[in-house]
Image (cartoon, rainbow, N blue to C red; front, side, top):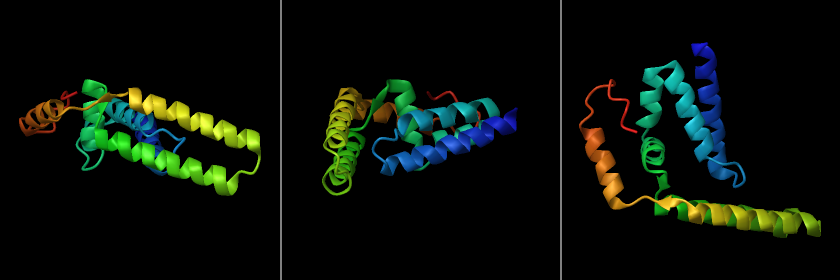
Length: 142
């Protein structure tokens, strides 16, 4: 069963990375699923993903505070509107599909804006707690 969760964890991780570049494919839920699969299968992989150079702080802070950084919000919105705008203008020629894409982008924008914003205090608290963790046994930082 462990190998199943490890494979699933890497699959979800791959989908989350793809989701960074594909606006309608969410990144956060797949990262959280990946972390959950690794938690159930391998403490080493769970430690790796929660301490990953790019995703570790994002995952841990989201799990602990249910918040994302303002930078994440801005990048998400820019990529969302660039890809959706490009699709509406250059790819999709059917007006009702263009309207559907536009309305979807508005919905995703509202969702992103309603997410709690990570504060400096939250990040410092996370970093201080992380610095106190010297071994891989410290898996409960979230």
